[in-house]
Amino acid sequence: MIKPHSNRAWLLLLPALLILGFVAVLPLVAVFNYSFHDIFTLDTALWVGPQWYLEIIRDPSFWASLGRSALFSAIVLSIQVPLGIWIALLMLRIGRWAVPVLMMLALPLVVPWNMIAGMWLTLIDPQVGLLGKAIAAAGIGFDYKFTALHTWILIVAADTWHWLGLVVILSYASLSAIPASYRQAAAIDGASRLAVFRHIELPRIAGALSIVLLLRFVDSFMIYTEAFTINAGGPQGATTFISLELGEDIRSFTYGRAAARAMLDFLIVLSVAWAFIRIRAGRDTSPETTR
Amino acid sequence: MKMTRMRPSILLGLAFAALALFILLPFVQTVLLSFTLTLPREGYREGQATLINYATVFARPDLRDAIWNSLVYVLLNVALCLAAGLPAAYAIARFRFTGDRHILFALIAFRLTPPVVLSLPIFILFAHVGLVNSPVGIALVHCVFNLPIAIWILESFIAAVPREFDETCFLDGHSFGHFFVGKLIPVIAPGIGVTVFFCFIFSWVEVVFARILTVTEGKPITMAISALFGFQTDIGLVMAMTVVSLIPGVAMIWFVRNHIARGFVIRT
Image 1 (cartoon, rainbow over the protein chains, first blue to last red):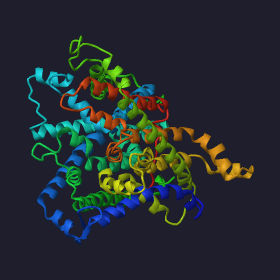
Image 2 (image 1 turned 60 degrees about the horizontal axis):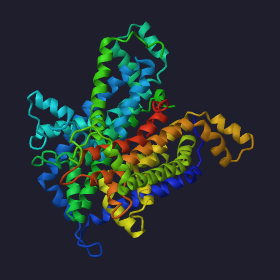
Image 3 (image 1 turned 135 degrees about the vertical axis):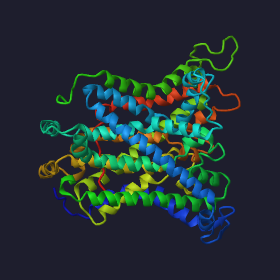
Image 4 (image 1 turned 120 degrees about the vertical axis):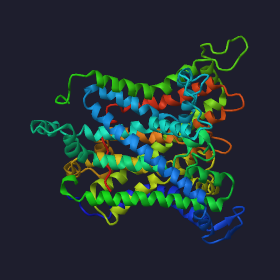
């Protein structure tokens, strides 16, 4: 279906663009401006050029946090995406039970973000927590405060608990939209389960999947609230992600450096998203995927 | 679904039991503690079952106000996202126009902008125009991530309506406004439900903007919970407040349960 060309469509977009201009574009321009200044108070800002940027990229701790954030995103994506697709595939086999399962999976999405960590910390508390008591009874020492590996496990578990539902909802939505005749035809041809997934299901969910990948990448790459609440970047900086470094700069009132750091973080996120979309767009040119 | 229905195997049951355990355990913990007395109190024994935590939530004006504050800006945000998102989604679903692909990328970029990045200038900007401590300010700023989501979801629902539908209405002599409100909106009602759901929950759970924009008053429920942590935290009260904070979200899940799985496809 070819859509008619009409530039009056811009009029319909105007309210949305005005709001986004005010709450997103204007602040981004402001951050860009701050990042070239040394800001003592908001009235006395001193032009310093790219000094903050040079300072940050010469600082090894920036690269270390960047590495930690990338590692965290890699772990989170490689757990949540395959697990989410697998659960969505299993849900196709349970008929109308899928609705209560979806409702259950959506539950963690409605928990206030600062309480995600709160609920998990309580759960693993050795005195009051159900899991914490079980772990203690089993004689396993779990010490998220001082053992880096344990902090990592806790943050990954809490993040997976929080976001698995979104991956499943979006995968299931597109999987259940595949007409039954497609799978019947494959079954008659004697296609293996793997072949059905590879050639029938995967192409159909690619659109939803790419948005899941993008959303999960950015939100895990810039994880802040959960990581900060659980161990504030500790032990000894082992969970200091780039967003926590940025939060540190903001709280210590070094606004110029905070702004430069914010710009760098934003540019990294944006270039990954852009590269990703270009790759997707390149694949999408086949007529089969255009509606 | 008839074709794919198979005899439920034990393994399938086990897989879903494990999933339920993983998802529900933190909730079970929270609900249990919310009915437990966790700080010693005159005439009560620590650890006994009680309703005191919930009574405290509704007796304390700061906690009651926090629930109200959150509801106000979240509903305001949902209204804004629908009002601005519906025409925008219609434009993208029905027309090609100069720069349409750039708009789609810009929307993705806005959704992907981390709140921490924007927090500082948003505060300064809003302080200038008097939007700090106001629910309007939070409702506006949550549009950064909710408006793109609203446009994506609504666009996919509008695109699923054949264009002949619009043309028939215009031939019948309906004006654009009348067609939009009277004809199109009822047809895409499930899509509006899903949009309301996602905008509501993402605004309800957000912490970074909600914190920096409420300096002295208008504290949302998330900040009220944070404020309960202290030298001697009444964890039972914290959990009761958390359970209360889940009620609107759970109600939203219930309302959209049959539509939540209608996919939204995002084109770039």
